[in-house]
Length: 315
Length: 315
Image 1 (tube, each protein chain N blue to C red):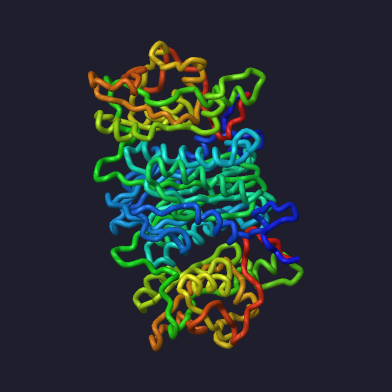
Image 2: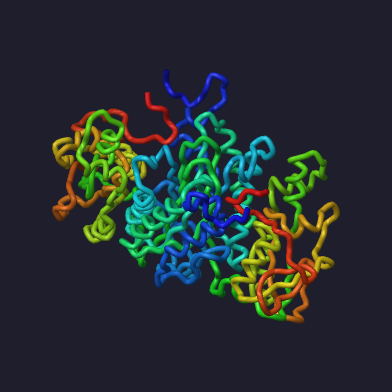
């Protein structure tokens, strides 16, 4: 039988279309921006880096671990895959410029899934002007996504996790606990408002936060991917300081519990430290301060274990 | 029970050590070269790109699909994961500078496997002076590896697949058919010399071929990852030309069949096109010429289907 790339049901599966059929259909969905000198189709892509330094990060997403196809549409998974990577570049105070996509799936996966995923990836990238410039495909039992994102610093120093100093204020911009609340709702039995399940499916990082934090004199910046307390622990360690949060200051959107705001991941809010006395705009919520010592406290005490260990077994 | 990261057998498993235990143990094996402004540990890495353009490529490797842990040591898989990515950058006429590593494995995977894999990755990178600057880890049923490699062009134009012109000679440097011969030996029942099974486990791309091809005036260059004929088909399409190979000119190392040399992948030889009459050093073997038209022929005829489709089902 000729491999036409079309199954008896009239539905195209990626195994029937073949590797190059899949690549062709996906690649044509990705417009190439002005910084792209050479896009998909060669051994490697070539992207202009005006700054002379490239910022680079990689994230993996696996079906069943980071998303479920019965909970999230392909389009939403594409948005999420891009968003969590773009947020890493923004958290460096850089501008995302280009993505590379590694995509694995079973042969029987419908081509429409791969195409809608690609559309989601593209549309999220469009929010910041980044292009999908290359990647790789492979056959795998479950859907797997590897995304590498590149960015440009525009001549400015990176905003790292190492610059926080005692006396700095700690402030956050973006959602806290939304995705965790939504995940709990999806796991049941408690129903939660749609905005939270939507937030689990598709985070909405406030991408302008990086530039804003820079203009506000941020001494350190990161995105909240594993949970506020856990991620601030990395920042505290990186800067050799302690961080004292006040539960009364943690911004709690209606319907979000304090525990979820403190330990829930996947919303990709941005948390930074700012020189003492710096007046911040309302979009940034001060929730604590940098102190001498180490570790993260809430109301002066230790915080219950939270956050996401990708290998740990919760007990 | 306390999670000490050490199982009852005295063997450390990555699930016991946890995500950050794994990252800590892996990251400390990666030295950072002079181009790295910020290595692992922040939201993203920062790498200097002297050329002002970054060359970037990504490859995925899956257990059971690209390697088997009963056939290949962790160290060899690390070497292979780096090699096939580094070859992509060399094939652009660029110098590899930095790698990002996405690593997934089951919780019961021994830490020693991840560490030896990392050593292999590091040692292969050392051959070209590249640093492993960041990445991500995830829990997965089988071992999965995503590698992104970045490179620098040093002010020169990239060597793409689009520059071949009728009259150019086609020449290859590196092994053809070694890995395919070795894989056939591993699949049995025919025994093959150890050098071929070793070549399947760990390709040895001749990394100086990129610079050499550039100095020889190459009009196009690529690495042979899926098979000579299939990959040259991409080059022919990219350049809008045909390629006429002569079977008598295909370099056949003792023990390699012509079919394997023409269609076997995974050796990461480099194949390029060079202006007519250009005298090439003995390391480059001329095996055909660029002609008007399209497609790839051997001795004037079409070539049996070969090469590797990552989704296709061989029949």
